[in-house]
Length: 102
Image 1 (cartoon, rainbow, N blue to C red):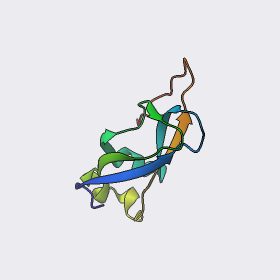
Image 2 (cartoon, one colour; image 1 turned 45 degrees about the vertical axis):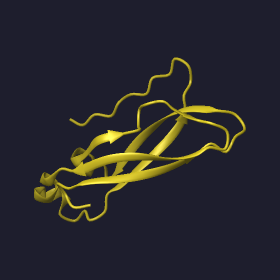
Image 3 (spheres, rainbow, N blue to C red; image 1 turned 90 degrees about the horizontal axis):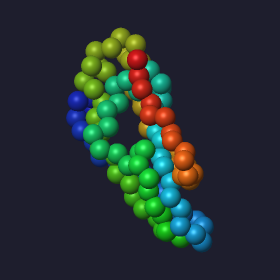
């Protein structure tokens, strides 16, 4: 992905059980310092997703890396940014904190 250009990626999720699951996904950006340049335009994360028994789905994330990434001297040696997701089964009354960058 070139900084400033939009990109579309798909993450595969599968419910291997015999019961429906409602879950929530959170994301992580590595290296952590690059996270401030990662911008989601549209994402499945932090929204409940229902997966039926044995269902497998592709979940899209539309994003871009801020062009200022290329100008930041701290990012000069960063040539790989990893975006990962963790899918948690939603529990009644559970609220996941939204990440924020200072």
